[in-house]
Length: 146
Image (tube, rainbow, N blue to C red; front, side):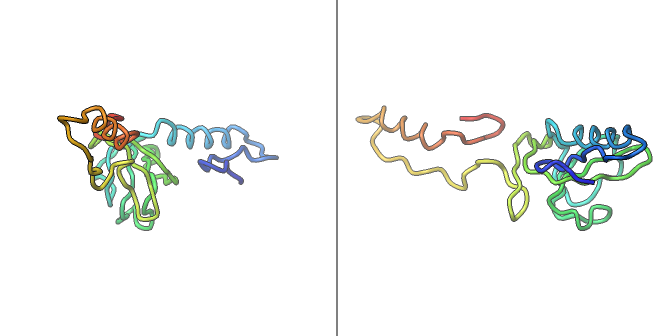
């Protein structure tokens, strides 16, 4: 079965007798990936989970072994974890937006250090403020875009 190129949503399988099964699988995947908000980023599954709970897998252990960097979603009936590729997610545990790169999950657009501002606040306030706003343009900081 082929899938959509960006999110891996399964296409309805041609020639199948049960179109509802393919459609339901695609809808379930869409539900898992839209408006992506996760409960936390962790290495191992929680002791108990509710239907639809989503987590980002850091370095997978236990049932999540080998699923590093993926999105884990719990399906209560019959009780198993689904795994999906993911690129961006909001982590409810800390309220920050995360993106996945080659080394794992990172806070989105958060600079390691703030840039040095040049100028004197007494003589060049407008210039200093302009540099500050330019340096922080698009930086996500604790749920707020500066």
